Structure formats: C-alpha cells, structure tokens
Picture (tube, rainbow, N blue to C red):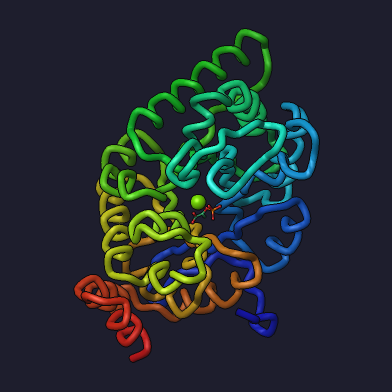
Length: 322
Ligand code: PEP
Ligand code: MG
C-alpha cells in the first residue's frame, strides 16, 4: 500500500463513536525506529529482536540488547514498546546458534520452544536486558511477549524465568522492573487456550502470518498455495474472534501484529472483531489511523458477525467489497 500521500496523524485515534484503537508500528531493524515515529505510530506493537542476532558471528551481550531496547523506548516517550523475545527457528536461521536440522522446521523447535529448551541461557540474558530496560526512565513503557506459544506450561515457565531473573537482579542490586507480559497467538492451540493465557498475562497479540499458516495447514512461504494462506478465510476469522472474546473476558488487552493489521480495507472488520491495538509496517499507519476515525463500532460489529457467518473466503471478500 503506497500511502505516502495520507496525512500523518500524531494523536491517538478513536472510532467515530469514541472507542480507542491503538495504531502501532512493527519494527524489524534499528533504522525503522525513526520512520515509525515520523509516521505517527502510537508506539511499537512488535519489536522483532531477531535483527540484533543476524549478520554477525556471535550473539549480542546483555548491554547491547539493553541499549537497543532503551533506544526504542526513548523514541516513544509516551507510548508502549512491545518487545518480542527471540523468535528463531522455522524459516529464521542464525548460523552461530547451531539450530537443529529438522524435517518440518515450522513444526519444530522455534520461538519460545528454543528459549525454554536449548537456548535457556540466551533467554535469560535477553530477559536481564529487558527487565533492566523496564526500569529505565528514558521513555515509554516496555512490554514483553513470547512467540510461538502452544501450551500454558510454556507461559508459566517463561513467567517463572522472568521472576527468577528479577530475583537475581535484586540480589545483585541492579535496577529492574517486571514489564507487562504477553503471548503471541500464532497457533490454533494458543487461540483455543486464549482464556487461560489471558488469565495469566497482561495481553495477547495475534500474529496472523503464522496463525493463518497453522490454521490452514499451509506453508506461509509456498507461493503455489498462496490462496490457502488467506487471513480472510472464515476459519482464521473465527480463530481471531475466539481470541479477542477470550481476552476481553480475561481483562487482557488484545492486539494484532500480523500483516493483516496494516490493511486499511480491513480496519473496520478488525475493530468489529474486537482488537484493541493494530500494529503494522510504519508506512500504513496514517491510512489505518484515518480509517479508524471513520468506523462506527456497531456497524463494525455487524460486519464482523456477517464475516464470521461466511463459509468461504470469497464470501468474506464479497462482503468487504459491498
Ligand atoms: C506473525 O506470525 O504474524 C508475526 C507477526 O510474526 P512473524 O511474521 O515475525 O513470524
Ligand atoms: Mg510469527
């Protein structure tokens, strides 16, 4: 979407009838920080820490990670910065980490599975940097989320690791704080268990790139099957709705940081589905903010209900075109 023409909106936005919707940016490298604030993003909804680990010979140490995160917080003094813990494996390789060779990498050791398994040391270092950054008064509020969650145990183990890192920092007399904690909803299992996840966490963030891949059983990279990888398929929409409903019942806020969130043609539908926050590539922030301001929540809910009642992606697309 080329929307260089759309006027930048600095303020936070609400729908026409007053519901607040945060419009944040996804950041996958240091140079993306400035454009994110220039385009009027209400903070960062997905800070992909992978970039700190790529194109080098060894992993970044605690101080380097601390500096990178505080630089993001400085950029957004009045907003929230959601940092995702390392999400490698699957299609994302980091040579010096010696990731396992697997027959089905997308179904193998990736994301939180590695952080709780063979890369527990790396996870602890990352959490030390994050808990220190959460205590710094340089700017915005830090939030931390875990990728590729499938089981409640992963979340309870991750939260226990956060707590033990806090205990270590306390014993060392190092300034620290526990940030808001959340899980990415990228697997059908996590969506099914969203009520229990929401009870244990402050927020959930739906990653529709992977969620579509796992709901539709289709490789997100396989162009020959791209028509299967459609977040507008009712099966995906129903999975999203299940998540937003469970989050609301659990008093957890719920965002979306998959590519779907950045399409202004889908903003009304996503507001109707109950998303509190949408996070996207910086370039689409102005167009989505503009669109949020035009939405009427009751109409958006009716649109979402109609989409949830559809049986095919074609029907959903037809509905959106009307
Ligand atoms: C997603 O899966 O939707 C997501 C935001 O994470 P990534 O694209 O980095 O896997
Ligand atoms: Mg993902």
